[in-house]
Length: 232
Image (cartoon, rainbow, N blue to C red; front, side, top):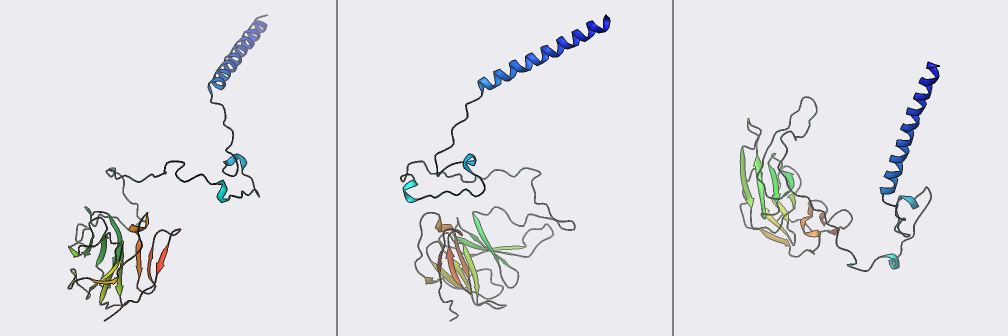
């Protein structure tokens, strides 16, 4: 008889628990937002995707210009967290070489090991030399000023004894006389390409190659132009 009452009590407890779970589930489902219908083809989401399924998008399917606001999500500079630091392989360490720069965009190494850095915001090219006991540069100089959002840097001719440093501005290409070891330009700039197309997102990206010329923009939006590097 005692066993029967215990069994009945256990069943009542289990039943009450199941009832409470059912009530809670019903309440959650009632408050849940109804599932939205998938977007119309061809601009759909995962619900219309499957192996072998393709979507044909034509110009007529595209929205009118300025139908929606531009989706721009630029990065914002914040203080570096105390424990945030690059992790190096065993046997190596990472130290801060230079800071306080203003929009540094590109670094090139000269034949003697100097680092040429394009500070696009300031319109300058700086040179860093050596490494001190504290891991910082032993010497820092401004090689050239008065540039227009410089980015690309190239030493010409290629090899151990270049005679020129070419710099790609956002709107032109200039060059400066150079001998290995120079930390300041020894002569005025010479304009090699007087005009380059600009606008949009292009101005910040002007890469130079001493063998091929200049290209501008991102990989999906490239302007390429060959020009002759001159030694004389």
